[in-house]
Image 1 (cartoon, rainbow, N blue to C red):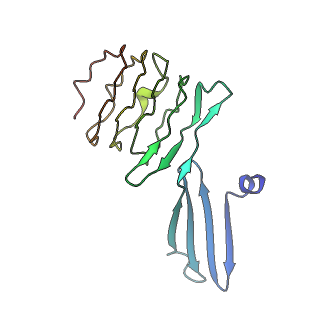
Image 2: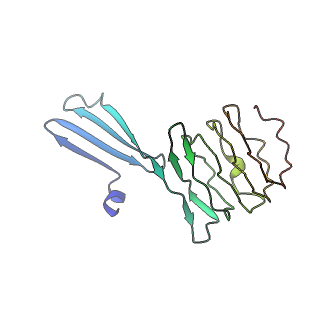
Image 3: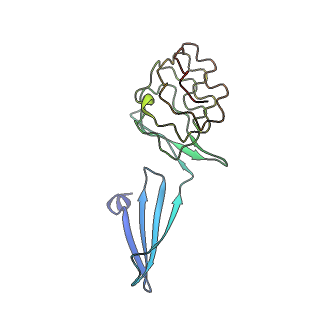
Length: 170
């Protein structure tokens, strides 16, 4: 890990072919550009994506999320279920996540800091997002929902939720 932190980018050259490797943990991919000597201006770029990234919390209480976890499935990239104690998430939802299914299932908070700031324009699945989140009652009217195809049971059991979502394009 220390070597990786000190060398997030490195180049390997074999027989006039250069391989430049760059890891971007925040986006979940490794970028490799391949070029030959004398043709470094037009490299072939290949991206290698991870299949999963675990949620990283600040401290043991699991109330503050530092990095959003996700997992690739057959048809989507799914956010990983947050701990029921979660009360703060990062301001930015990774743009490659396409499913919020069950993200805040059984969450006990009334509001979740930064949740209203998420750009949800790439989300296709919101089913059970707030399933049994009995106290949840936050304004998420600014979420973009025009690409969502499944909202089944999104607020099932979220008995405190009474916000106006009439502006959502569903």
